[in-house]
Amino acid sequence: MNFPRCKTVEKSLPIFLEGGNEGALFIHGYTGSPHDFEYMAKEVNRVGFTVSVPRLPGHGTCGEDFLMTTARDWLRRVFDAYYDLKAICDRVHVVGLSMGGVIALILASQMNPPKLVTLAAATHVFDKRIVLTPLLKLFSKKMPRESTEKYEDPDIEYLRKEYWSYNWPKQAAELYKLMRLARKSVSKITSDTLVVAAKNDNMVPMKAAEFIYNNIRSENKKLLVFEKSGHVLSNDVEKEDVTKAVIEWLKGE
Image (tube, rainbow, N blue to C red):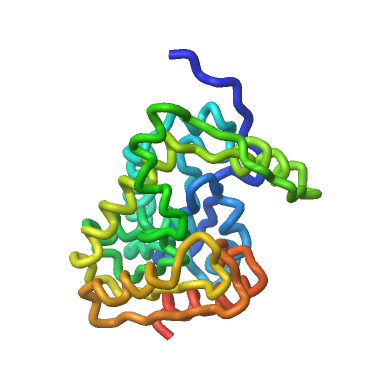
């Protein structure tokens, strides 16, 4: 197999911060990377948690690399990271953003972590074309899309060019697999669960958060909606308040 010549920019590197005997596993989203949890990871570590933010295969390197990975690869990486953290911590809590929230639901249905947090978990999305991706991927693997936003940070600008300037029918079909599996998994979840949604989310509708909240079996659960934030709640205008809510939930306050 010929592997693509990619690079891993600093912003995409996995994050591991040693702390106490309680762990927090953070799972980033589709076309995202660990940088989306940079602020939250440091704050959660600061209050005593050992923190792990793995980089999902094919993410944060280059588009060619992305196309070589599947939902199975992404799931496997998260389960491996969970087992690694569980080996050094007495308890491991799970926090997932967007597709990471979907993966967190799947993991929680099998591993039953004490605390679960979903941030804009994409069990449902606004873009109805996702249901067509199993067919669309047969005709196109990636399609250029208009991207006028530019970033001063060279690492983030590199990620924009490699990932966010395209639609990825093949990879979106893999995301769709995870979405369907997560929807089947929620009824098995008993972890204490904080479901977080953003009022200005243009990717994931509010019904996704409501679906999770209404269908999990958890006795201790909470639905929290932030009024000003967009989709990437962990790295948006209310990231301090979102992080505070996550910390309070993980600590049981």
